[in-house]
Image (tube, rainbow, N blue to C red; front, side):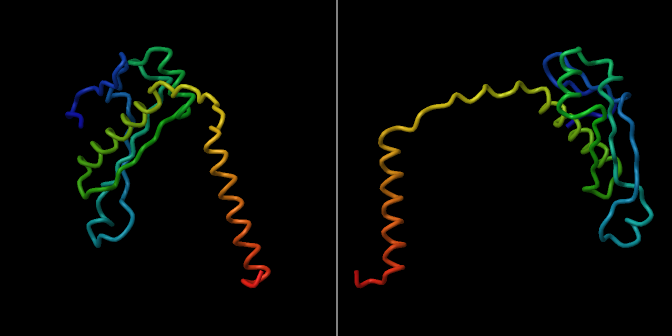
Length: 140
């Protein structure tokens, strides 16, 4: 959760400045009666990494590669525009953190063990016997 007016520290020397986020508000969809039709409570946060000042170049490249040139998130969970704004900013921060996370190490291919190969072939034989039994009937 972030406090109002604070920049969001994403770790590893990366900062998301609140002033760089563009906000759009609209009516929330779904049921809700008169309130939902008259209140612009849905918050949409739009952030452009290329224009961000708190990003090192490596982070900018990684974010743009993973998320594209413009990052957009929306929140319409609550009836409060302020709370939806906080939720949208939290979601934006999580999305950017996920893009900045180091990629997992590549998978190293391994050979199946002799025991696993034997189990697999035994299961195949058992399944084949069952199907043959169904086809010819229980007499044979």
